[in-house]
Image (cartoon, rainbow, N blue to C red; front, side, top):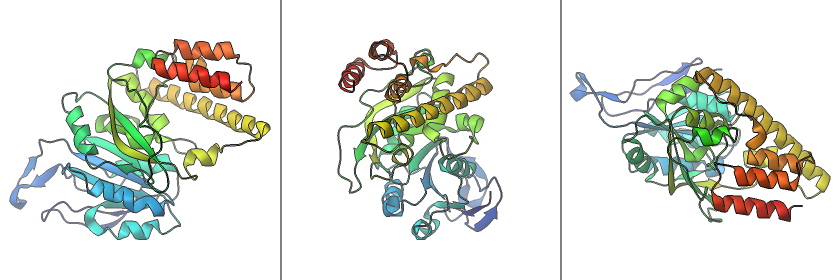
Length: 350
């Protein structure tokens, strides 16, 4: 992979340059700065890195970048990784000049963009952002505030508010309930599943990502499903029941491309079969990851995974309504109101 890096300037003591780098790009660590351009002193604050992953979402990209540039927490760097967009996204990124780190790379998918962004980052906390989504301006400040008392945490997540292509809010913030603390026993029974947001609602510690990245790459390997479960098996998590970002739906989201909504029953079953295969593949990756991280990894079979069992039934596999309702009722990671809604929806979908 070849990466072009436009280095982010810090202050007058840190210069910037245009670099052509190989697999791992490097830049001066902004957590140390020259004191009057003299001896280095270490920052005693937590430094945050926002990694925006960009691919052909140029019509939303400026809003994503602006939401990061307007963060109230000053000790933040902004990295934009463009995965060979063809819609003018590069021009938009370059228009911001040296106010951010710009990485332009060969097309490799979402996970490869996260790998590339992390390789040039310096933050103690890493906050990914999909380029069609938006952060609230106080996101990083709220994340740092919650993280400081619990530095051993690997993962913090928060609610997202769904918006449409025009930025109009749809529904309520989600997940409606969040889990905090040591949840590894609960999610061991659900193959790592619990109600959580997509990538833009997740934040990771640098020490954790240094152990799991680079992650495997491919069109159906997604950062949220690959990175979140192992983090929760390794250490307690922080779940903030507050909206700190906006998830945009616009008809061209990745999930819609791979698993489009269908009205013909046979086509719906085919999409469900593809989703079954997706869950199986994600489980294989999870097992492989946690076996490399933990001395005594748990058994994470898919039998108690509620979404997996739901799509199995939708695909026509032999999962009875009673079996599905039992999975919902016994799911330790599912809040009670969600259990009730899931059972009702299953009944309606008979």
